[in-house]
Image 1: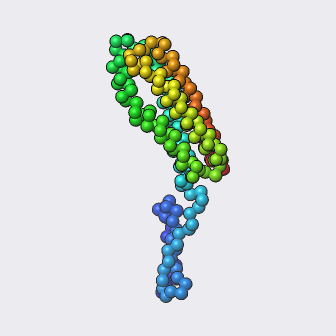
Image 2: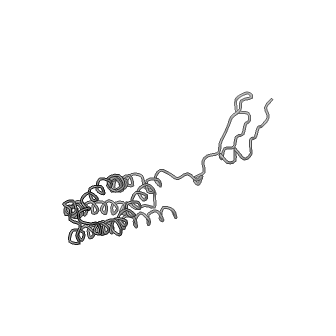
Image 3: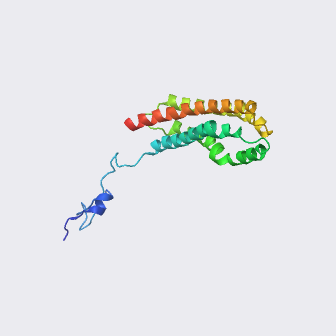
Length: 193
């Protein structure tokens, strides 16, 4: 004797699972459990969208760090008494590895998965532009910004030493603003699509 069994209620509705039991065709008194196919709009974000979110998050964080350094941290280095500056600068540079340098690398590396896994609304040319700006960022870093740190490492925190540091910092910040702007545009395109 088989009777259809239907489970419904808050718990099954919340899990988006609806069970039905009935006689399986060709089987005697067999029961089957079926669940509806997942809706394409079931609230889960696809992996391709996560690649864009992760890349955007790392790049927006890095932009925030770049603005903070250019507007607050580096200018304050000039206000430190010259005799107290060397140990302060040494402590500062010893602490920027994880919150800054790691994210500089991560922000660039998270761009590369967009070549293989990007939302359909993200054009390939935009990924090329992100990589090109990432390379430009590191060219400024290694060719201009890090050499500008040499005078500070030698204990000089005067205006002549800080000017090239600040200029290179704002150049890097401009490039990073370009990356973040492209990613914001791509996020808006992917959301609308």
